[in-house]
Length: 272
Image (tube, rainbow, N blue to C red; front, side):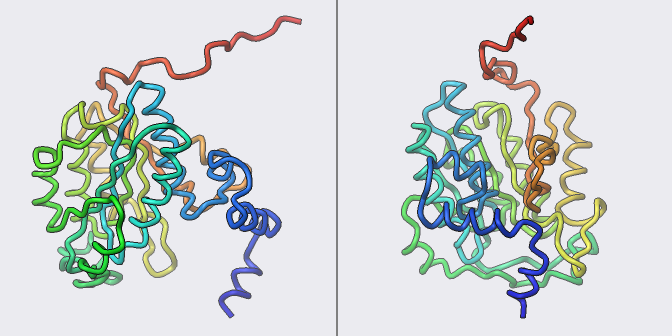
């Protein structure tokens, strides 16, 4: 019944089928498949590929990608596959880090953590099984309020180009956003961010005063020269996938490379 319901609600069936064909047969270049959404987790792919393109234009040969909230590990494994293809396409090496408590969600603190939707222990990680499955990603286990503070001194990561936020709770997301305070050397001047829990369904009813949305708003209000804003280039697409609303760009306005020219050289208009 759910499959039939999805089919009846599908506004662009031809596009959906075409994406499946392009993905399964791996038609076209990787960059093309990412652009048309014919890859697994197209929201992850968009962030990783475009961050790598930016890194290459700025002269970086290595960058980092982080997933905050690993749970069962399927997202982290998808990131490994996408990172592999992205590195081939861009010649930028990608280091992956997956943050998780390892024991599931912590206890919701108050209404901002949406206790009507989340419970302590949800999304527990089978750490040993996941370690056997991952190829290159590094697991950072523990409370992110603790691991986030020691991450940069312990791992000294390459500049971060993309972050997947899937921490569910307002309180955990606030701690995760502190990973954007490590100092200029640890970031590209613009970081692609995906927030998993800012749309939801009739159950979650996310709003700007709870959950991840509130955490983003508070971050922006307390950081004068670092701002997390919508990816307006995605919101202007003729076919708007739901994840287009979930990608935000973190701008580091004082970054020494923020103003580096990365666009096309010839932008003159022809006179007729």
